Length: 397
Image 1 (tube, rainbow, N blue to C red):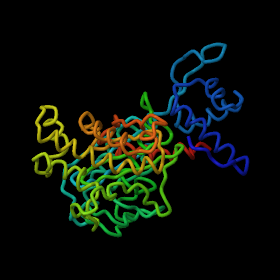
Image 2 (cartoon, rainbow, N blue to C red; image 1 turned 30 degrees about the horizontal axis):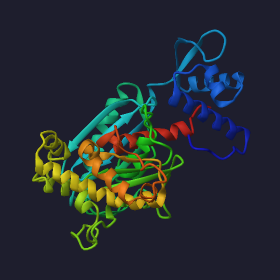
Image 3 (cartoon, one colour; image 1 turned 30 degrees about the vertical axis):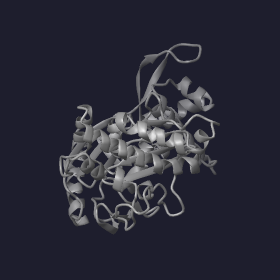
Image 4 (cartoon, rainbow, N blue to C red; image 1 turned 90 degrees about the horizontal axis):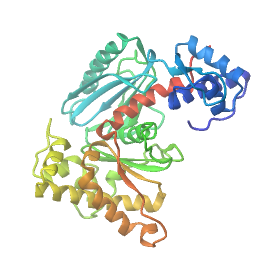
């Protein structure tokens, strides 16, 4: 959990500590009250009072008995509730829409996906389809006792910081699209965020056995390529919220024209459509990188060459980011993750050739890994982002 400023009053202090307790159980549960007290450095009496409030609010539940980490009798184990508030995540892709509902335990309780060509379609039409999917998913969630606490939407474009306005999404053909008032309002507070940023946050919050370090670069791809930078556990947004536009970094300055108006951008060589075409596969609804993966697994030379060339271009672009930022890891997520066995070796080779630390022999090259979340990263990150408002400010009066 990110560091928070010191509370200014007793009420604020209590709210702060409620959040700390809830975060502790969500991130490391099941825990006993004694375990929570030890983790947070609070007295057992204080923790007991806070836990009782969270139990009454339906945010925590008690589950059986377990051995506490301290000396004494076994303590009742605390778990996040699998009912009550839930996070709703949605993803608007160039060729698909997806919605999922996640409970406080991080479990996906409802999910709906739909393949549809959204490029060049009026935003109102796309958002109307998404609204119908949201209502179906939250209806399924309501049947198991869940209610939306917030909605976060992942989009493949630039989002104006602290707004719900998509400034520019070239691969959708969107400009200055404000989602406020267009999507249904019954899902709680609305957040709109770049899909690569949400993929990175999903990675950061995933709790996988080998989590990414607190500072890493996350790369994901659909038609375009996005990146996000996490520094000391916080997303680096930039002055206007547009940090991470790796896909429009030129790798061949006089190369192919790009949808952004430039030439030779990374996504024209390593974006999903570019790689599919180089492999002799025509992109379209239902023809995504899963098909290319099957060709690579079969050892087809044209497919393998296309992926290696994409990895080389990606490594060239990432070398600049690694030299500038010195991250602890590069995580390749999104649709590119499933191509890891063939894509990552040329990425690592270019980073070893081009990054300062590796070239100077002063350090090992930055690790490059494929995200286990794969194409689901932005959607899961969106749902986790939506539920974190409850974790950060639990309503447990």
